[in-house]
Amino acid sequence: MKVFRPQQLIRPDLQAHIYSNALLENVCNLKSLCKPKTKFCAVVKANAYGHGIAEVVNILKNNVDFFAVASIYEAILVAEITKNVPILIFEPLNASQPPDQVVICAKNNFHCAISSLEAADYISKILAPTSRILNLHVNVETGMGRCGIEPKLAADLITKIKNNENTKLAGVFTHFSTADEHNLEYTNRQLKIFTDFLEKNDLTNRDDIIIHSANSAATIKLPDSHFDMVRCGISMYGYYSRPMKNPPVTLTPVMKLQAPVVQLKQIPANSPVSYGKTYITKRQTTAALIPLGYADGYWRCFSNSAKMKIADRFAPVIGRVSMDQLLIDVTDIPKIEVGQMATIIDNDLNSPCGAYALADLADTICYEILTCLHAHVNRIVH
Ligand SMILES: *Cc1c(COP(=O)(O)O)cnc(C)c1O
Image (cartoon, rainbow, N blue to C red):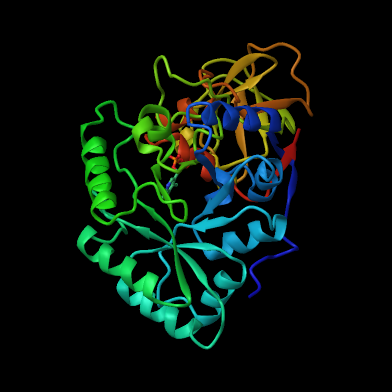
């Protein structure tokens, strides 16, 4: 199965600086919240939350116990980089996947999430003529309401997996829907359903099965949810799932996105700027053109609202963000030159152009701001 495009365009001028030290320190700090035996699963789906999956896997491959991805396609990519770290695929294995994908998963020792009895039958049918064994993690529905299997059926699924020669029960897990919220009542209820399930099915304290439930928020706030492994995404990249006062762990953003000023333009007072004339200059204005727009993942709703950092000052975006260009107002900032770099996403949680601030402007969460960053942005590892 061919899933890569080697000729993919890269834009050297759009620079996402990836600081390995910050990434490794975040992982280390998160691990320090867990028991020494707890495995650390680094979630690298969605191009490692926009940070560059190959880059992030390379930095982490000797420091984590597992990688987790959304799809088999990402798993294949990770497996090209490291053969030593097991890879967990979150998408439940299912009959829409061609048989060769099931074989690829088994051959590569991928760990696959599963949440239906039909999928288990499908897998055994495909693998029966082979001597291959597929590692499966049963996703138990405890209140997330997405793709888990109801506890009653989960017990049957586990039996099916155990009774089949070609499948191995490698893990049992669940996922929280509100662990990022201040009130953990619902998360605790989910946790209770999960622990009851584990106890009822004799799944606790087993060396051969990995029990896991914690995402970043639960890893940070709910030690009882750690079990045998934590699955951290956003926190590894330096963000709390939502801005947090007095967090129990220090995190530092791993990425800083920059692009150069490519033109300086004097615009007279009372002149329209960019598409739709949504901004009219109030004074003689010095505008700097940045070669970035919504096609690169810089949202159009940042028009007339976001700021960029340049020469240690903050310059507002004026007029509409277009597909691949925008203007910032640098009238009040002395000595701006063509070629000078503007910081678009700052590696500082409190920055007016940090991912939290941008998420607020876009009425979304920092996850979406980060993952929207286009793959053609040049990831530069430090
Ligand atoms: C994405 C994902 C995670 C990671 O969530 P974060 O909030 O980024 O830590 C963990 N588990 C599952 C099942 C996921 O889909």
